[in-house]
Each structure stands twice: as structure tokens, then as C-alpha cells.
Amino acid sequence: MDFFTQNSYYVVLGVVLIIWLGIFSYLVSIEKKITKLEKE
Amino acid sequence: MKKPILKYILFIWLAVVFCVAIVLPIPGIGNMGDRARIIFFHVPMAWVSVLAFTMGLFYGAMYLKKKDIIYDYKAAASAGLGLLFSILATVTGAIWAKFDWGTYWNWDPRQTSIFVLILIYGAYFALRSAIESDETRAKLSSVYTILAGITVPFFIFILPRIVETLHPDPIVNTQGKIKMDGKMQGIFFSSLAGFTALYLWIFSLKVRLVKLMMKGDE
Image (cartoon, rainbow over all chains, first blue to last red; front, top):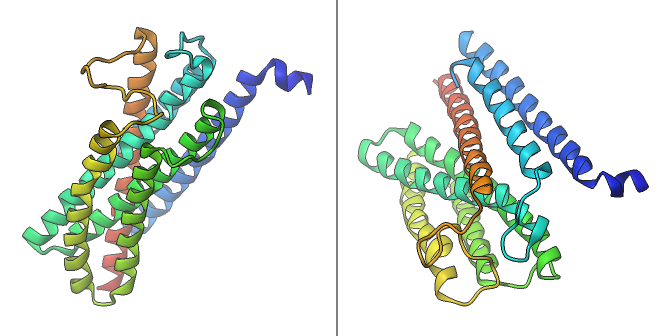
């Protein structure tokens, strides 16, 4: 637990970046699907 | 975003903003210390919701003028995003309130006004789902989105300034000055730009999807 209390800023940053990466990848995958449908 | 490079720039832009906003030492605002960091997330979310509701009003008015159903779908797409971002702003605000005010929810004028706004736009989607005919739905919900859009400035900008609130001074306060350290202003406006671009991207995706659905219906 010491690790989390001593590096709390970086833990929060890590969580935020993982969430952002998730949202971004989700949007990119949707955009790919839409582009594919538009071409059909 | 037609150019794929733009979305990767947005990804890096917001990732850098998040890194700086969370890790870089800041002087804080008043006696808030690290709790002031919420301003880099919560305020851009609230700003995007105001922008989205205003766009909803604009497209609602455009539908009534041009009678093209796409404007109604655009208004709904924008209002949906506005609702999403105002819920996010409310949740982030409540978490911050727990640490600054000691409780998640205390019906502060700011909390009450955004809660009413969420109810107003919740009712907008209830109205939309209750009408089957495309044309009637578009007409009624366009009028509704205009009426709802007009209330937004009152709930977000005017009401919380009239009554006493615990909420920290808005960015542009009653003196009309920005009370923020220069470094924080830089991060804040970068975050604002990033969130706005994110909204525009999601909005364009929703519009493209609606156009595809309309083609499928034909």
C-alpha cells in the first residue's frame, strides 16, 4: 500500500491515461466501422 | 474528423494536458491546494455541455427554418452529448465537493441548477421517444430544444451568481477578471481546447452514423 500513497499523483495519472486510451480506441474503432459502411 | 492525423494529434494533446494537469506542481487557487486541479477537468466538461446545448438550440432553429430532418438529428446528437458532459461535470463536481465541502451533495445553487438542467434535457429525450412520426417529433423537439437552450445561460451563468453559493468563483468572476496563475491558465485553456475538439469529433461521428441510418431507411 505504501507504493500507492507515495506515488498517488502517478497512480491517478495512470488511471486517467488508461481511461483516455480506452475512450480514444473505442472512438477510433467506431470511426473505422462508419467509414467502412460509408464506402459500401 | 476527415483527416485521420487530427485525431491522433488530439489523443496526444489531451494525454499531455492530463499529465501536466495532474503531475505538475501548481500554486492552487485560494486555500484549495491540489483540489484546485479539478478545474482542468470539471470546467471544460461544463463548458462543452453549454456549447453542445447551444448547438442543439441552433440546429433546432435550423430545422424549423429549413424543414430538413437532418437538422433535427443533429440537434438530438448535440443535446445528447450536452447531457453526457453535464452529467460528467456533476459527478466530478460532487467528488470534489466531498473533499472540499465534506459532502457529495448539499443542494448548493450550482448543484441544483445543473440538476434541473439535466432534468430538462432528460425530458427532451423522453419527449423524442414518445412520438413515432418523424415529422411531428422533429417539429416538437426542435421547439423544445430552443426553449431548453434559452434556459441554459440562466442556469449556468446567471442563477449561481445571484444567490449565495459555496462554489468557487467562476473563471470570469464578478470583477470580470481571471483569477488564476499564468501556468494554470495555460493548462486550463489547453484542456478547454482539447475537450472542445473531442466534442466536435464525437458529434461528427454521431452525425455520420445518422446519415448512414437515413440512407438505410430509404
